[in-house]
Length: 94
Length: 290
Image 1 (cartoon, helix red, strand yellow):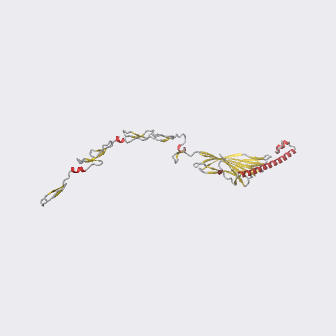
Image 2 (cartoon, each protein chain N blue to C red):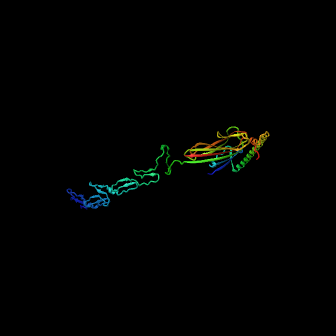
Image 3 (cartoon, rainbow over the protein chains, first blue to last red):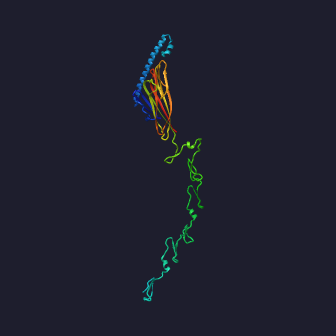
């Protein structure tokens, strides 16, 4: 069965692909979206992916900063390092 | 006064004996030679008798009846020789009896039985109804098309339609309110049968990528049914958490009709910085015409 892929974008910046076996006419344009080319979709998706990686990277950095602080605080009150790491979620370097 | 041919004169021309002129009496023998027989007639010049002439040719059935008139006698034996038998007929030229034959004059092929004889009429070859239910209420029918070809009920068919959609978002916060519609996934579905309604089974799969920092959470739903509620009670972020969920529905599409099969993708109950970055929906339709 042949498949057709259509590309859309929303004003919010979201992008969508729709893959159908029913031909392009079988796809309803999603509300609030407009058809775009595959090339434009790829470009916008790359931007979203990069931003997402930066976002989760920032969260991970914040996690490391916070868990390390918790770890150090626990160790400072005499909690063993291994226990302190487990309680704080701190990832100890192996 | 002198008499010419055929005329006589008597008398002397006196008052007591005047001339009398008279035509001579015509003799039959004088007249008969003047006549002859034409077609269909016989003439005897001697006797002067005129009569019909009977042909002596073999097979001539005209004769004189005792009353002197013409009479045609029916000769069955002769008439019977004029007839012969065709397909489906049995003919006895001796007795003249005509009857339908007892068979072997009609050759049937698949779907027909019988010879066309009175005791073995042509008929459609059918099987015995093997079911316990009533044949009139449950059996399909056979129809004749414009070309004279027998036709049955519309052919059964099963068709399949599907679409996959993937929407990528720029890490949008999961709404705090419950069941906020983020997308409405719609798939137009046509009933390919112009004769009968379609029995439709649709299947929806939903997969939402959530990013949940420590002490955050969110819910995603299909229509008003919460499918996944996720909360991170750990100490670090859960990246791109996703669970694939499924729902199945059924519907009917009128003959030759269409439906826009839609389902809402809803998110809600977000807290603690929960975000979503991708929503994937698989939308499948199984269409049956039976």
